Image (cartoon, rainbow, N blue to C red):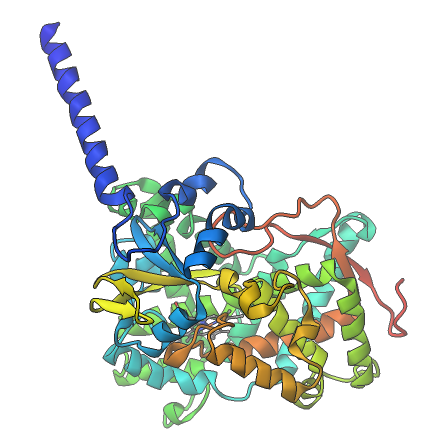
Length: 508
Ligand code: HEM
């Protein structure tokens, strides 16, 4: 008996000691950078216990310290990070990529399922590898994209919305919009960027869409995002997730290869078509098999998840602001859109309000609201006075910077497209200025800025052009107006009520 008590005592003492050590090592915020407050470590864990709205978590725990000090220490991914808010700090981070080096999941949490899925790729790599990937990829993303396919797909999206609305009690109840938008954004990235087709607008059970939905639920589970070391344990569901990720990558690559079987391989690298360029880089050995798979996967994920979230948020904001829908409709009419006009580059170029709506939506609800992806290669002084020790992970809080009254005025929290101006030239000038000052950072900045921005903005504009002509929409009153609890910040499981609009412009 005594012996059992003795063992129990040792076990308890050991547990207390191990917990204390773990708290000391992991949970106590680091001393440096001095003068930068820490958000309590348990704030990141709140979504495990409560179905929270992360815009409220931000207001309650992060907004005040991050605005006052320009940055906070934040516990995420089982380590303390420096989360930056002040544009001057951001601009410096973007400018000195050699010091604040990209360091993605393949380095940070190499053993994780997420790292196995995305691998070493153009977004998260650094130095020579990044240059090598960029040479293959950049021309395929910086070309002028055709609008016809986007507009045709947007019409198909409208048909799917119309059918789903009829099924939802004849249009009186809202429809969940995310699943339809995922099928739509997959079709766009496949057809316009990769020159392939996954059939997602024709079949609700298209393989890629079904696999992707299942995979997202596994990969982005908050507990594994926060404690990636758990992926080292032999947990059966994680092993299944790893296999699912590998299967998804194979499916993507083999479908791309199949749709290019008839490609003339004489000169695809002189082509600006991304699908052919990636395949040719693999064929010629410019990319290894693994590099090809990793880059294809990340381009697919970034190229359709981010616009998907951007569209959900934009439709949400426009449902809340039906006057903005009306103004857009008037601008489309004036552009000849009512008389069967198409959203060509020339037509969109003459639509300042459309441009302002898209920028304002990306400002108020940036699709990547928070991002931690850089690591200090040396001991450095950020903006001359924040001492950042070598090895510190840094990131930024786009949502916070974009809503700071110091940079966006007293109504920074409001969705108000008019703030951008009323002429296309004026709006673009203002946009460039805000980007240079790192006050608008939805697409990152410096030489690592998003290469898909041009496509993403075009996709948002074409979609709005077609949707606004066909429907007016509002929030389903029974939808609990809430943002996601963790990860990218956007309306959670959004439901909208769509009403058909006849060509004359009257509601039916
Ligand atoms: C609204 C939509 C989009 C948003 C908000 C967005 C945002 C971003 C952000 C914040 C980064 C930096 C990521 C990081 O440092 O971890 C980035 C990089 C990148 N994005 Fe996007 N993106 C969007 C759409 C796209 C699309 C459609 C593509 C095309 C496939 C794309 C391709 C890329 C690439 C290749 C990079 C890496 C650039 C480099 O480091 O050289 N993005 N994007």
